[in-house]
Length: 496
Image (cartoon, rainbow, N blue to C red; front, top):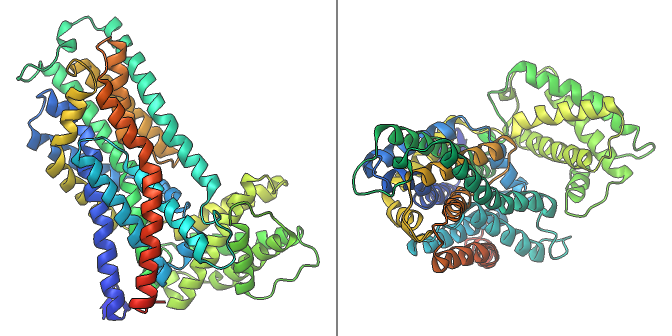
């Protein structure tokens, strides 16, 4: 059966449809679980009717997704074991995709059912870590625990832990500042069943718009990254590399690769690295958590760069390459780029010219491998928007009435959303995934504390419990489902 210009066995078409359906289902659940936070204040304060609010939020989520850089998407994927990222079309790759998506959906739906604003980001990351840990038990050459990129997990975990604290403190301070500057008592009233004054409505619509846009540009990327992982694994002829890359970019990579290969040779005098497969294996080993650089690592970079240069030299378009060449090129580009990034982080490149060459080459390589087609962004955006329209009520009630002992006021809602907007936008710029849920819920709690409204300890205890349990539960779910799925895919369905 031909799909996206590539002929696939029927079993692979079924896997592709199921995997894409699950990825969009995850974003749909993300919509009614996370995006509901963006519309909570405008709906609860009667600023907008629910139908208008969710449509407005969905549109700005779409705009956020369409204008996103993709950095967050590939930041999440960097948590996965290298061999699974490179071999998504294998049995283990299929098992990985299904297990991490199903486990994330199960936990998100469960916490939503109880009206708990838990984090879809934590959910997905926990599932990925579970898959990585389980993979280290089954994959050859791994010690248990090596299946997770702990350095990347630390960066992501720090962002997810710090952002709620930023939300709480910054929202409290902003609310106090607003109270000091704006004395109009209308801003500090609880909703009374009718729309607030026009200027307050405008303020709340603005903050809702900002949070919706930021949510789309950050959270929406997680689904985009998973969809690209699926497409690259199953249809590499079309999605392994960016076929829209122009001739200038292709030739820059060819030239820079040749230059860098000579520089890497100086780090590994007398070390011969014959054949791309040997070089790829050496780089894969270096990218495992805790691995140390050796002369052979630099020799492998040099070998891969020379082969990349030879394949791309003189090419006007990547369409000139055969499907097999595109797949092999992606593997080499991905390994070389990730290795250069790790080497730079470990300060192994000391020469300024070498650092610049490596940095420029990595940036250009990523343009060929870390790309997201517009149709993928649109599909994810619609899934987010549909989810928002269906399941907003439970989260809105929790945010509006169950965090503080008094109902949410207009000023509190505006302060919390302004901080959430700024925090998520900053994280998006640096390619870090943060939780819209955590930032906004913490922000509302911060404004309640600043206003001395009191906090409902039972609700906060339940929310904190959901936050604390999310990672360990999703790690166990991801690991268990991966083990089960791997057995089914390999032994029952016979996909290797």
